[in-house]
Amino acid sequence: MTNRPDLIDDALMRPGRFEVKMEISLPDEKGRVQILTIHTNKMKGFGLMAPDICIKELAAETKNYSGAELEGLVRAAQMEVDMEKAEKLQVTRNDFLGSLNNDIKPAFGTNQEDYSNYIMNGIIKWGDPVTHVLDDGELLVQQTKNSPPHSGKTALAAQIAEDSEFPFIKICSPDKMIGHSEISKCQAIKKVFDDAYKSQLSCVVVDDIERLLDYVPIGPRFSNLVLQALLVLLKKAPPKVRPPLKAL
Image (cartoon, rainbow, N blue to C red; front, top):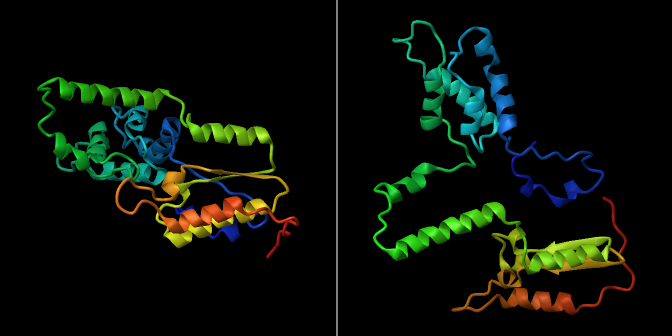
């Protein structure tokens, strides 16, 4: 079990090495209800859980919390109990809210401290320019929520590749090469083409070529090393005899 699958060697992920690959994502609201119910069962069974606690409310307030973070939330809420004022030892709704606000923060959530200092005095709409910026931002937010993703050139290329019904289809995308040096990026691109050569029919979609080449409008214009690698690989004819797959 690992939380960094990107660091696993590709050789270990070949078919036959691991029979089942299971990715556990962050729980949705229904899953958070189940996790919180499990971790509060003992509290409820021993009468330590106040009646004002609503599991569904807590689940709605804990977006992007992992299972471990939800367990930590329950433990932190137990530590919030005021022993001097408590006539009966019980964890209340305020204890959970105190833990939410002060103790347990989701690793993949929004850290309010990062941006609250920028808007501590609010936004003053002193004129039309500010209003237009806020309106445009709200429009973009709604488009992001409601519009289907991937509706540009890459979507068209991916649809054409799917319609081809080729047995091998691979997208060569810069989002899989973040942090790569020029040499390692060339090696990653070459690996995509080498894998494509192993199939009798293959389709490689080169996505966002500007980002692949590190193109900028000023200064050093692009990575010549990556450009030359792409030119060579795109013009290179596939081998007449496909190399056999090797099993280690």
